[in-house]
Image (cartoon, rainbow, N blue to C red):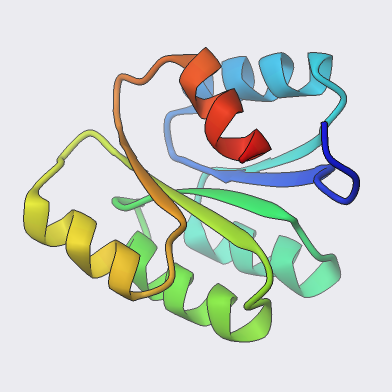
Length: 119
């Protein structure tokens, strides 16, 4: 694990996925915080810096792209990885233009996600 890559925020309304990812990443030495709504994610971002933010595009209270734009203005040095179960080429392009580092489609392999985070 590279230095400085230790705080990860997972923003996803799928609580089982979030818990499983959190456990897998914690085992690798990362400090992980989860949020299942946009408003909760905003509160976490206000309190601390996250090196990596794994952000679902579709949340119950907001769109992931809105959060991506908000968070990337506050922390342009953070790495944003977009995840979605509703993939389309246009949404991927829009996310990348808005500052996302990568875009992964659910269901995804945890090992692939770990590689993306290490990169």
